[in-house]
Amino acid sequence: MITAEEIYKQLRFLYPYEEPWDNNGILIGNPDKKITSVSIAIDPTFDIINLCNTDMLITHHPLIFNPIKKTNKLIHKLIQEDITYMALHTPLDYSDQANIVFCNYMDLNYNYFNTFKNGDGGQIGVIYQDRDDINNIANKYKAMCKLSKPLPLYNAKHISNIDIEIVGFIQGAANSFLNEIIESNIDLLVTGEISHHNIIELRDNDILVMLLGHTPSELFLKTALYDSLGSLDLNLDIEILADDSNNIFVGVK
Ligand SMILES: [Zn+2]
Image (tube, rainbow, N blue to C red; front, top):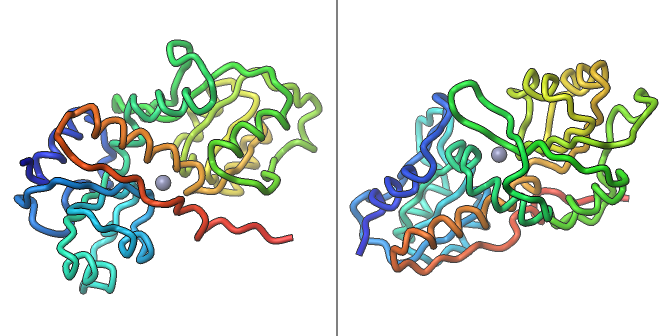
């Protein structure tokens, strides 16, 4: 049987890049615990921890990110249930597997795309050619992100020609890649979230912005992590926990 720490090491071998400000690894529980079953989710919410009945929970967003002075009910619950907790944040964002799964969902040729670079060897998102109608492009993203409401499209009124040729996608928040987005010559940026100030700057560069919501834009990362864990052949039972976007992104009329 494999330990929690060894699972982390093997995943980091597949996902070598991370941002220096990030917090990844075994954050709660015994790193030497023997693991036979793992659950995967995007957000470490109380609902997700309640759903988890495996030895280990891995979430994309870290439960402990800023320094904490005392524990909270989520940490208590993990300790009480003896669930070892791992965060895998920017290493998963910057993984090849994330891009492979994204291309599968969007029916793109994996060998024919570019990415946004963080200047440190890390790469995120996909830049690809799609001359489709903007509504058809939106429908493909809604299917991948399990969204049914209309998606907000910014800058359309200020850009005379909204014929799409090149699309750029960045899951989660795109703010730290603003320069790369502008230099990439895309017509449309699709992302989870980006600041108002940056949307205005993209308007001045004739780039449309379509917003998916942060967690919906990252749901496909659960499949990427599931596939990577499976490829390691560690004899683990792996479970993807329920669609955690439903609790976060509810449309109103
Ligand atoms: Zn995120």
